[in-house]
Length: 518
Image (cartoon, rainbow, N blue to C red; front, side, top):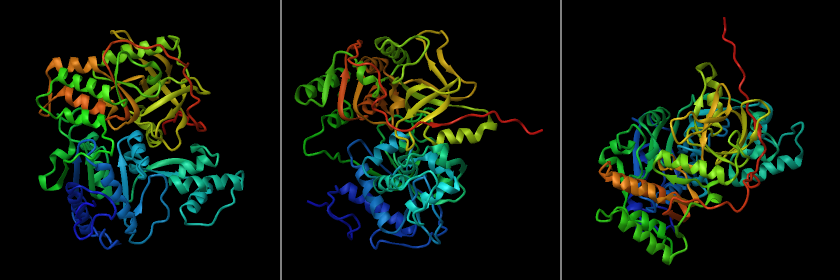
């Protein structure tokens, strides 16, 4: 049965619960005040009203993604221009704009897999500058010009770009499909000058106050979608940005929406909300779920093959380091170099202020703190690494790198690549649950001994035992299959490390020394 609708403001043929219907209608009211009427499917010029921030919050499975998706469709049908961050064509008079944002490429790619054209916050804060020759292709793809003739590009290449754009709506992705590299058509990046109207922010539990303030400078209407059961950003004292909003600006989705065949992973995640369930009782629930459904596995050891693309999720840093060393030993990785196929995670960008443009370039391409990458091999210059960035439109680049393989004691980390400046990386075969927020994998391994240690520590975060928040975040990173690892063991790999599963042309990204003006 189709859920009750208020004046037909919610979409037809979509099964909405009462709380989803209420949230849809309340967001629609906010948008109507901002000049976007979802009922009539019309827009008005933006008023100079005071900026507003709303929040839609709910636990995993409550229908946030479905709600966001349907709101996006209705807004687009009303004539609002969706801004991807890839390319913005000629500005139309009285245009209304919408951008759908996520904190990381991985989180944005989860939305894109649901048909929602999401991008990262960095790609909205900074806009690309295109080479004029290739900008003609972008204009043609965006429906703002005729099919161009470009020296060095065949009709077949342009047709590939067009076909790609019809399904993905990504200008850089389309240009890459034509055989171009990012460095061919993007000459640089600049801080956004033009404000935008409406911003939807997914995984907003990961936002800190600075990021929220940056977004409020750009958007007049912000709608935050977040999960109150996740972990708050470090330094936020267990509080998320939407916790500060008045109750009237928060819409809560309380109902859990399941598929026809119930999802045992979601069942386990929501069982953590029962105050009477301790760690031992929860682990019995995991065992019971594993006995009934193959989507939950009670693992006796960590699967090393999976670690190459889906990291083990842990709480303690020492556990993470031990598992990484065990992973490298299992694959026979030398102590003094990396093997192609080893996973890494970006730990930030180390550049002096005079290289700010290069920092923006790296971040806009998806190389931000927490980005998951795979090492492809050494670059052409000392200190450079070729890497594949998961979730990025132009995923394969070469960048000046500082790669750290940390030690389990107080010794200095081994550094196979040590450029004077550039992107810093830690090994990514195992990551902390905090850094896994916003990401999703088909299969996730959760290292249960660490969560047991967290339960024994007795720590409380935002009124809930820390181990439960950790377990909730870890479990909900799995889209298809959860492996609950109970023993401190590692299986032997069945195949060598490979990069054959990764595609794309590597785009060189260089750091050149800039001389100071005298």
